[in-house]
Image (tube, rainbow, N blue to C red):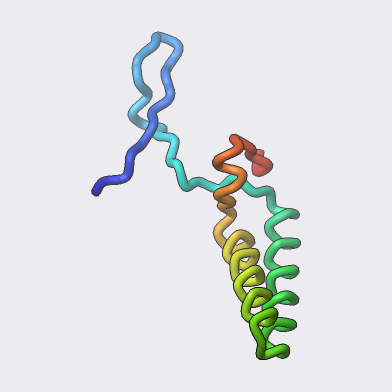
Length: 86
């Protein structure tokens, strides 16, 4: 299924087809991205060392933070309408 896109309006009230707003855009600021990626690497390393259920949860949380840092997209921010990348 094709990805749904939202188009902003121009001052004349017409859809601006040249500048679509993509739902999976970057919404995390640069400093926050670096902190997320580094924190995620630390959690992942700690989790791999434990080799238990707690370790698996740490690896999952760390992986999510690394993804957030590398991609610049946070689903929780998108749902709340927050954009710290401005």
